[in-house]
Image (tube, rainbow, N blue to C red; front, side):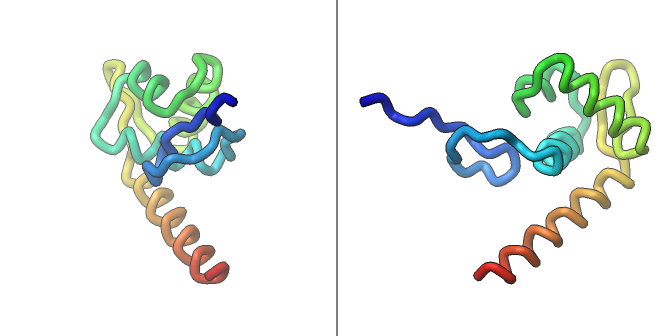
Length: 99
């Protein structure tokens, strides 16, 4: 019998079974990872995105003002950091409701 393949959750770091990731989870993972500035290839490999997904998400985040790109380095803006904080608050509230 084969063991179920597992992956590390991009935000929580806990082991979780493979599943389709929500857009919300991907956005928060990208913004969190890029706080200090990262190359696109590092974002792709760390978050586990395809090239087409990375293009879609990074351009959308850039157009929304959540990320900035300069000389190939993608970095979360202050507006993006506010999104991370708001999502963390929502996650905490949701956990309180379901406890």
